[in-house]
Structures are given as C-alpha cells and as structure tokens.
Image (cartoon, rainbow, N blue to C red):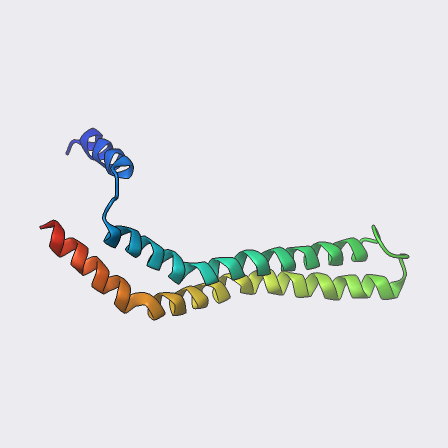
Length: 119
C-alpha cells in the first residue's frame, strides 16, 4: 500500500476546484444541519464556564465580602456551573442528531446524485 500516493491524492482533492453547484449545495446543507448545535454548544459552554468561574471566585472569597452567605452562593453557583458544563455535550449531541435527521433526506438525495454523476 503506497501511503504517499494516497496522501498526495487527498491533498490534491482538497485543492481541486469544486465548481459543481451540487457539491456546494451539499456543503451548505451539511453546515445548515450542524450550525444550530455548534452555536448552542459554544454559547452554553461559555456561559456555564463563566458561571463556574464566578462561583469559584465567590467561594474562595476572591470577590465579594467573604461572608458565609457569599461563600454559600459561590458553592451553589460553582456546582450549577459544573452541572451545566457536564450537560453541554449530551445536549449538543441531541441537537446535532435532530439537525442531521431534519436534513438527512435532502443530503442523501444530493449525495446520491453527485456519486451517480461521477460514475
């Protein structure tokens, strides 16, 4: 097996012009199927990371007045941030699956047309 040849072909295919509108449409459909899950994952992950960080700062008395109430609030915020970060990936997978199911028929049909035209 000549791995150099396979590698070279893969690189060449990456730079080959993709002028066919079907290939471009297939890429757009793929992005459209995955975009809501990606946007949610990045946004929710960022928000929960900030909640976790604020909770840690409050519980370690970096911010706030250092009272028992602020420490308790920091622990609650930190735990909720950890739970949010932990739930981010399962929610992402569910959103991605639903996005793929929504566009599966169109993507499969277009991919079949492209593969049949290439033969």
